[in-house]
Length: 281
Image 1 (cartoon, rainbow, N blue to C red):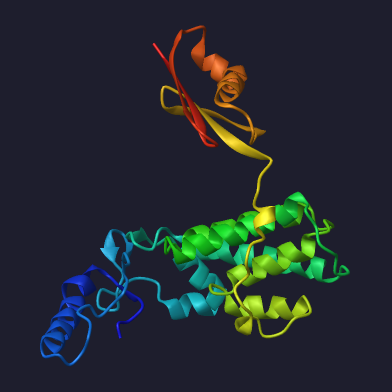
Image 2: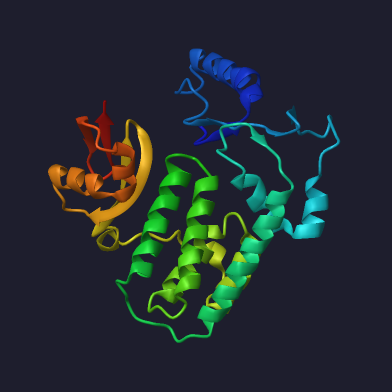
């Protein structure tokens, strides 16, 4: 005590959490323990709904996990549930999501199988290697600090897409191992099988991957260009451009010029390394 982490729905914060805090404070007042809070961190999860109603065993009428596992497998079912949306918000269940996750796992299986046949390459600073390390950074932050589960899955999907486009890249094995490692908490059965195909054993005992800071630095970034607050274009620009150069690049965009249509720009708002907003009259 205190417990490191407590996860529960809103009903927990108004029932179980109150009970736990009350008894702990009583014990503290009696000088039997030295702290007054039972949990260091609380996370309130949302509910999964179907047709606007909370899915529960008491309500009934919804697809059960056993049925989905039997048809699609445990990994695809778990992935689809966690991918619906942010874990702290209510989410509407859609059966088609399980089919999509099953297709993703099959794609991951195919590309890792292709990479496993290649000889292990050396260190690489290719775009794929940078993508792998940025994916590690993003997934680690989303899971640890933000406590979100859907966005790390999305990040792994993006990495797999890049790997599919460049299976012969020197960093292909690194990207494959990264994708398998990061998807393991969600899809442990498939991940363990693929980890063995990559020549390793017992992924669940391996430490969580760590990003290489040197490969997190970007030479370019995606500049979002807005006109009166609405996104009109996204362009890749060098990371070292000054603000006036970013504005110039934004104005040069054909999509932006079509929106301006010769109108006078009354103000330019620049958020470094993120966006340029052109305000017109």
